[in-house]
Amino acid sequence: MPATTAPRLRGSGFGFALPAILLLLAFFVIPVAMLLTRSLTEPEPGLQNYITLLGSTTYAKIFFNTFFVAGVVTAITVLIAFPVAWTLAILPKGWAAVLFAVILLSMWTNLLARTYAWMVLLQQTGLINRMLMGLGLIDQPLQLTNNLVGVTIGMVYIMLPFMILPLLGVIQKIDPAILQAAALCGATKGQALRRVLVPLAAPGIASGALMVFVMSLGYYVTPSLLGGTANMMLAELIAQQVQSLVNWGMGGAAAFLLLVVTLGLYAVQLRFFERGEAG
Amino acid sequence: MKHTLLALAALTGFATAASAQEMVFTSWGGTTQDAQAASWAAPFTAASGVNVVQDGPTDYGKIKAMVEAGAVTWDVVDAEFDWALQAGGQGLLEPLDFTVIDKTRLDPRFVSDFAVGSFYYSFVLGWNPANFPDAKPATLADLFDTAKFPGKRTFYKWSAPGVIEAALLADGVAPEALYPLDLDRAFKKLDTIKADIIWWEGGAQSQQLLASGEAPIGFFWNGRLAALAADGQEVGVSWDQNITAADALVVPKGTKNREAAMKFISEATSARGQADFAAASGYAPINTGSAELMDPAVRATLPDAQTAVQVNADLAYWAAHRDEIGTRWYAWQAQ
Image (cartoon, rainbow over all chains, first blue to last red):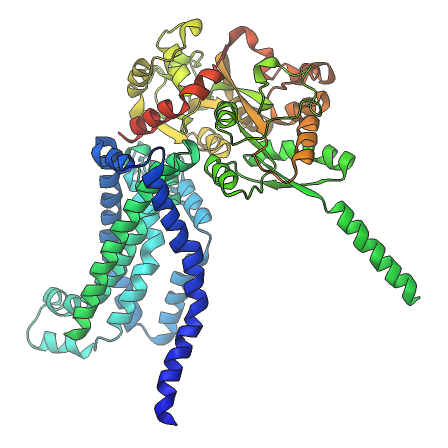
């Protein structure tokens, strides 16, 4: 009897996944294939949408902006998330649960509401500028929205939980005694961080960073509301092409390029993890 | 007793089924759609028994996708007039039934085979008096003069009639010489203030930018400034060279409620419907019979009281060159 359980379980496992697979097939794979078709057939059959996208300096700049903003957001998110994850790991259980709840709570608030809240905080007559002026730290309001600063602040805030969670998973597995051992061997705090903690947490940093980077590449609401057109990102280009110019061909081409890049990065992540587990 | 209950249940069921006829009206949301619901949908439902479901915001990509997929769920849509002219030519819209819609009293500027005006509006220069206590901005040239009137200025983000015309007028082009649009000259003029532009994507955002002083001066839909003023916010408005454009009511091709859609448009473009909407929104009526139904004091605040200083955007020109101008517009924005 026990010999037959394993195959049967495996079979029913696929059965359980079937609804999800069908859902993805019907509402993701097929529409993406249709979009790809349109990008190759509208307005005329051929590659001209891709040639226009990849050949013009304007679109090249939008591609650059997309990767640049995603890169900046990812780097800052890592720098902020790492100490938070570490704190969560070493806090007593009760306090850790409170801090964890605060982080999750921010994820459960509506994205648009959070972005508008940042607009109100960051604008020239907003709370932050008024406070800084009231304290006499500045005499002219700082330009915090409609530029890279606004996008970065808004997106880092939204991405933080997606970095903290994978980091926490890895850091919790690190035995604090290892750091004591490092100290006993004469490592300074900086050395213990650089040569012991960060290398041990590297898989968490890598998976969190890739997740944040990939999510940032396709973000629309936050860059559109907190950024200016000077750092327009790819998702905004797609919105313009589809909503305003009703050019599904070009919008589809841009969407497809974004998807290819994203899948490429995902492949990198998969490979990294397989190697990590093997070693 | 049991029988009575059953009969009642059957009757109620029947009544629900009879009144359940529905159609969907899609517009841009906010105070404008609220006014459309109150001035058009409510009397239409009262007269016809057809319930009007409000949806939005208008999305041209969605309309095209619906029509091509043969799954049209929007029956009447409020769209920009130049898009409507273009979309009619591309076969995305139902021809309007002018045996149901009485076009004899509609402003001929806003009537075509596939679209009638929803309302017309003006882009006007607006500013926040708190930021300019001394000299007041008065002309479109002032809007582009960052030395005289420093600070961020806000303009409509999407490619549409209005901002390009304003740039040319500010640069000294005569209103009658605007078309065909000299895009090189317009973008050159816009370049001079590019670093100071904050784009607004929707009416509510334009109001927020002006009222907060984030952008103390800009180019706005007149109705949104009227709404701000009605809320008690101090707003400066200059009608000098106000640029008119219009919204259109259209019916996506393949709607299942064609008859109801035509009747809805008939109600919306009636003298009464247009007068009520104009009073509620601050936009101008496209029915020539509306004026006499309106309070003269309210009428005086609308774009059609400003025709002497008005410049009409050429919507047919825009319909013909929409893609070309739009492509260039977005490329310029991203540079």
